Image (cartoon, rainbow, N blue to C red; front, side, top):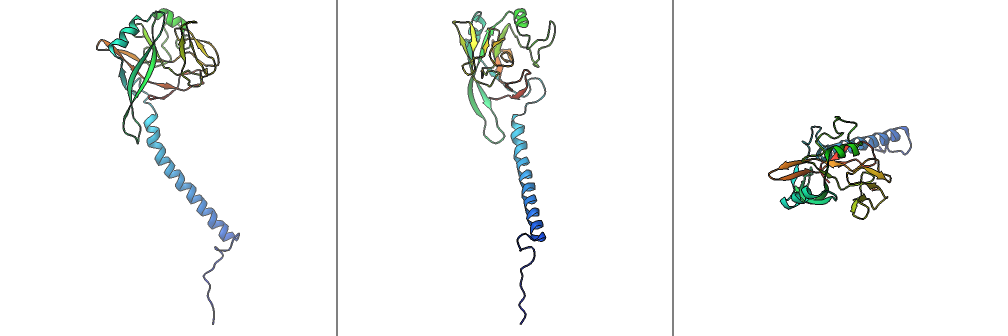
Length: 217
Ligand code: FES
């Protein structure tokens, strides 16, 4: 009696048929992974890529009246201003985060002359799409533009010092020493109902240009 086997060349290891079937399976898995990955990446990126329009990608966070009064009085020394901001992600519910910025009162013309990394020359627009000094006040991101550590104000030297790799900045935020590629990053500030609002923007570290990474921390 003839015995019929269901075994074929596709089942034999290392036959041309088996190799081509294996390749097909590998390509199918890679293609499926790519489709799934893209599907996940689009909403995640959508949650962090800011709008190109000036200031429209972020939300304003109010300073308290007491903090605003302290900022207005800060002439020779900066003040640390805390605020609450809401953080949104594509998948997580909205949450409130506490953070802070450094604020100083400036002489606008002195500030402009000191910050040549922001202003290219007299009458030139700043390299950020918003007014840097409002009401003669400036707020800085608390993140060092070198690698993102948090720097501090040192009242002995009258400088901002970064503890990580020793970058040094003057009162106006100009870069004086250390590996940072630019001065401190000014953030948007606006007058609002007798106090002020700030907007958090995270800029790319290590680059001389200010490239927006996100409007959240
Ligand atoms: S992170 Fe500030 S100097 Fe490196």
